[in-house]
Image 1: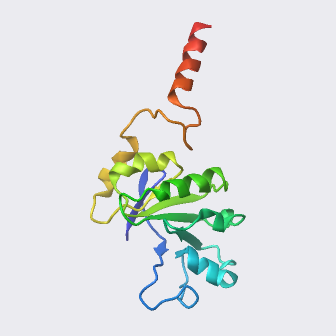
Image 2: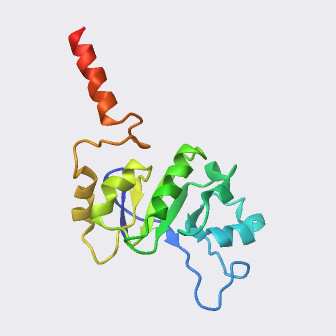
Image 3: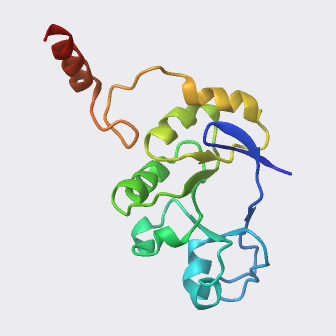
Length: 175
């Protein structure tokens, strides 16, 4: 069974990622029973048949918009965001928007070309689960979540930038 990082621990992945094969269409691809993460296009095409299932997650490609799930995000136990290649950073914005603008509180998983060097930054925008590349050591990748002890910029995980946090701490010590 494949392993993923979730909530800063390595666990067994009990979800299946559905990818369209050549000749498949979003309307006709079969979604098997069990925990399945389907492409956004499959969800949109088969929503009537899939929406009653509690074991369906959805994955968003880097060229798709998370707003397509507006009003529905809390219905999914997992939403995954695909990183087709290491240098494609659009997934960071998708994750941030899912958390900050659409209010998603469930498992937000990074899939695709996910490497250790990205994990610290991915968690900063709201990811709490990571399906790293299978050719890399997942236990080594886990260490990537703690590569840095402090972050300068504000983000999903830290609302105030470092200079604001530091000034408040100094003022509290002076009083």
